[in-house]
Amino acid sequence: MTATRVAAIDCGTNSIRLLVADLDPATGEITDLDRRMVINRLGQGVDATGRLHPDALERTFAACREYAEVIAGYGVGPERTRFVATSASRDAENAAEFTAGVHGILGVTPQVVSGEEEAHLSFTGATKELAGGDFKAPYLVFDLGGGSTEFVLGTQDVRAARSVDIGCVRMTERHFAGAEVPTAGQIEAAKADVLAALDTAAEAVPLTEAATLVGLAGTVTTVAAIALELPAYDSQRIHHARLSYGQVREVTARLLAATHAERAAIPVMHPGRVDVIGAGALVLLEIMERTGAAEVVVSEHDILDGIAWSIAR
Image (cartoon, rainbow, N blue to C red; front, side, top):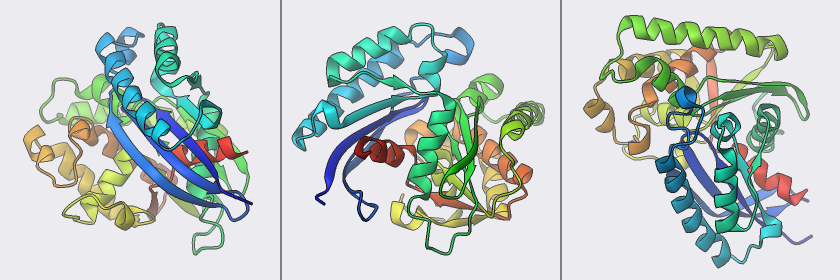
């Protein structure tokens, strides 16, 4: 069977990402042709206003114009392109403006998926290559985004899934807005918010029954890069790295105590994550504490890969 070439786009609250890849359904292999990310901060102010900001829309449309050129260059048509939009566009009153703009540029209609479908896509992307390795099932996969975090438990199939509204952008805007360094009171308030959301997630997903905890998305990969003391971001070193609870706790404490300039000076820090990484790391730490996991396996393959496989089906 010949490989299927697809283009997958994941538009979240903090970033918009593109994957152009060749998929071989017979072997389960995915070959990246182009994988890139733009920090578009689509979720700017959505938690407070309920609307997508005009500047955020324009940043997103600019990224879409760039991606349209890349997709066309690889000869992928609209029938093999899927655009999935997540938390921010679920929450916004003016989502129709976003949808029309994207369709006008890319020729595909954004699919604003439910949190549950988002969780299923993330699970497929993260676990398709874990089977047969030294990672024990069942897996608890969490996708820590800008506006929401999806939890999904399963082995080959999904047993349970739930999306809750905690993410690095939402927690920053809600609790750390305007703070150069968050106070102890702000941190405690954010923790309480996260714990309440984890209670909600636990109503649907058993959070302590997994043999392997798998963490996805930019907060988790950035914390991994810091813990590994990488001189530059290296996806091959980060993919399937195992971070201990102690490492995550140490990095989180460092980030929450750092100034904006100190966070920006970390070699692996993407400029678009400087202001939200502290809140994101706090969410990660609270997830590890709640699940009782001694370590988290970091995956560079996530919802974007899951979207790609959904096209091949």
